[in-house]
Image (cartoon, one colour):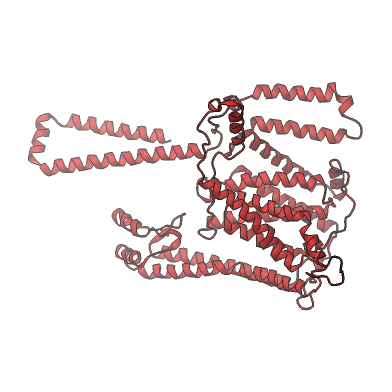
Length: 572
């Protein structure tokens, strides 16, 4: 499109020049120049203006085409590494796939397949063939290292998981159990869930041999290391302190919300606060964000020298090791409340992370999957890579670098939704909980209700701000820049200089100058500034009700009360 536009511009300029040469003889041209010096000056000014306009259009088209080429997946290739790794191998892959299937299903059928494992290994063979196809034929994403084929396989695994979830949604509980037992024979028997909040004493005086047994048991739990490692990975994925704190606190609030249904979520006050939020989670966030800061500021020679230039065995192994580090690394600035687009994208990322983490407990409890089952490990490993890819694409969309969400972010959202549907369906069909026990305690419900009201109020103030700006004869751009909307180009250019108000901050001098350009707009702009202030105050008040809910539950466990009954406030 840019080449066609540039060609049409050049053709118009050529025709204009030819028309001018045909319509003016040297004598007439000289007479006009001698008779009208003002005409010559005006003509030169118009020509310079046309040249500037053509240059601007050319630079915009080149910038847009280069940005699109850089942003579009499918054309990325590592520089400075072994070129053979990036050559297409479709025919070789087809030959290997056919040979692999023939070898396993014909030559070695009697040794590999038996009556007991035929279904299991047949499914694994089909999944392997599909992943090989994904590695060869799926489109590249924006991630390059260690190799685009790795991320194609991750996306292919997500497609397989998508189809498995849809299949399981059509099965009853016995069918799901039989399917899971193909991969883990321990699935099925009901396990007693451990409650961590039965004894919250810091010092057990009735046990003279080990009075600090409660704290020791929690510190020696393997999930302590899992919490720290998990939040270090979340820091590498989110790369933003605000979103990390939101996810950390919100998960504890969700545990409090569902503790009347799942005993695993019943924890002591010191477990919530000092082992989770300000303990393992905080340590993991510090480590992860330190890596993010190091990777974001340190100058790496990602693509400079080719592997042949590394001398010796050690040098070449060092270059191979660098292949497993990111090719480029940028910190994410989500600016959660800057615009509706960023708010929706950030909430989607938080929703996927939290619901995916909660589904690990819901799936385990609903389908009786043991804690030590490899199924939990496989699912967790997949979600680490999937959320990394999805968050990368979500951030590109929030920044306006992409016109739509990427395929991996779409797939991650659909997988979380299907997992939740599977849990809700079979929880209802098995009657795991009585209907009157589904709602949490009243103080928890009030906290969620207050949070929802604050979010709606913030939305109302945001909409009122947009309406006031429109009444002032201006508009709010996607990046929250306020620009005067007028047909007078000079006035619009002057107002754009003074009205560029990032994140809605307008100076008094800017308001006065906008008033000079668009009379009567100063009142609306001052109202806009007031509405922006109220929106910012609500931004800091939104998490307050849920934090109060968490503190109330910590007080409950500190006072040695049992878990709250649904719908009750006093007496828990």
